[in-house]
Image (cartoon, rainbow, N blue to C red):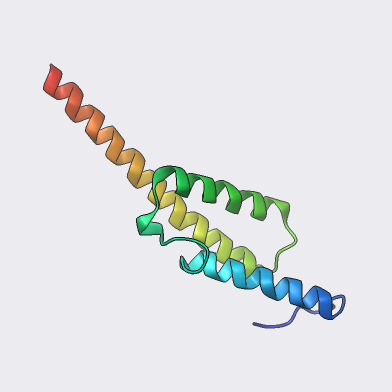
Length: 98
């Protein structure tokens, strides 16, 4: 990972590197974050909320922001799949009743 230009010393660099490692792990679906495919709706939604908060807070490098954005897109896709599946089940149940 490239160092930040004009960073405020070794302590700041270590924090940025640790944060970037967390973003990269989240973006790839490894590490502390579970694979997108295995997430339940609530898990994906909660992680997506966290990703949005981090993006809105700013203070991340371009690389970190892109990784967060990509993770957010993957999480949104998981949520959309769950919601579409729920809609299909409801439609099927209503059709069976009528």
